[in-house]
Length: 257
Ligand SMILES: Cc1cc2nc3c(=O)[nH]c(=O)nc-3n(C[C@H](O)[C@H](O)[C@H](O)COP(=O)(O)OP(=O)(O)OC[C@H]3O[C@@H](n4cnc5c(N)ncnc54)[C@H](O)[C@@H]3O)c2cc1C
Image 1 (tube, rainbow, N blue to C red):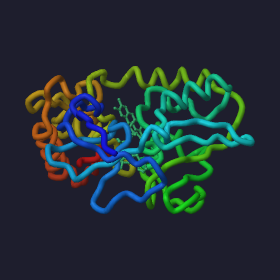
Image 2 (cartoon, helix red, strand yellow; image 1 turned 90 degrees about the horizontal axis):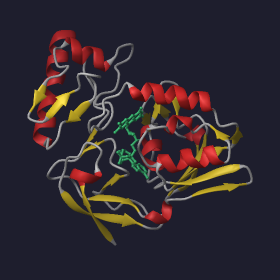
Image 3 (tube, helix red, strand yellow; image 1 turned 120 degrees about the horizontal axis):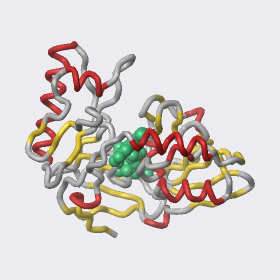
Image 4 (cartoon, rainbow, N blue to C red; image 1 turned 180 degrees about the horizontal axis):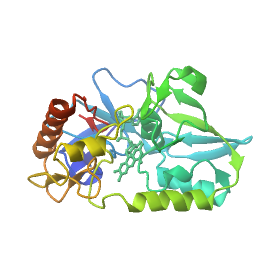
């Protein structure tokens, strides 16, 4: 089964072609040569990406079983946050305005500062079976996942923290409002990508309708009608300039397909 997806509306950065995407509706491996997508909140899709697959909506679920939370890989972050609020559970406050599906969040170890999706994770379920967190190499915005994340389990702790939620809300208020895929680059160890981009003269720099935001230089924003070519040109030129000036290799957080 396939589904037609228009990436110029589906992706958070509002760029990309309309493609037929393969739907994974059982615990199957990703077919050879395919790339997996979730909510496309961290993607820049080119006009000619490899064949793509995504989880079917049958993997959009949340269940509480014997004090363990089971979440399907296609479940959106907003749904998890609402569930945690409703059942007074802690650990999901970081999902406030952190767009994505459970699978995409686990694959990127998404989070904000020290609050990361891996913190309360118990295990993930892929086509190879259940894998405990202790067997998954992970770190800052990184997780080494062999396979497709179809489901994950989380420790169930009482006490949804409204103060933490308010703090995340406040942090998010300082982010650019235009379409983006979040941070464009990972922070190099001991440095801030945004500061390097600014010091290289790219804060507010535009190519067509794409721009490194004036609010937060590490956000590559689409001012409306921006293209892949414009985005790619900015990404490559800032990398070159930062390397030339500071000898630092910026590594994309955004995934280019
Ligand atoms: C405004 C804005 C703010 C953001 N702020 C943050 C932030 O503060 N912190 C942060 O970490 N991120 C942030 N992001 C980025 C994004 O929210 C996260 O990376 C999120 O985890 C992406 O989830 P997704 O479902 O959209 O995944 P996608 O963007 O579709 O995919 C991301 C990666 O996950 C993989 N993937 C997707 N589904 C699965 C699966 N089921 N199994 C295995 N791999 C899978 C894909 O292959 C791809 O490599 C922000 C994005 C936006 C637009």
